[in-house]
Length: 72
Image 1 (cartoon, rainbow, N blue to C red):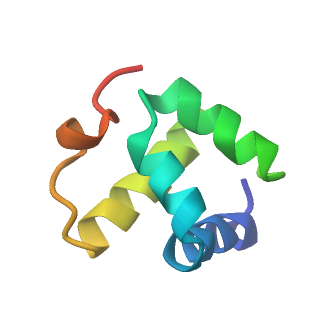
Image 2: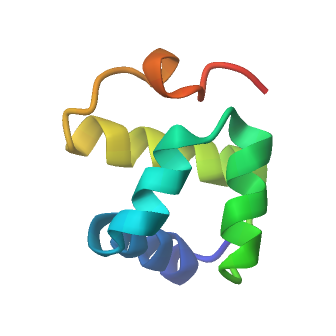
């Protein structure tokens, strides 16, 4: 994932409530990967994890354990 794509994903999480809710409700990283691929994003699971961790941290949404990002 390029820096530009990472920024776009981060912006989409902020701006698109339906997308954000789907991502936060996902059962784990594999589900998140499917969701972002549907949206045209291409990244590794590590890159996705880093983006989601930053989004969760920046928005005081608690730790990753409560959102399903602790597994897979």
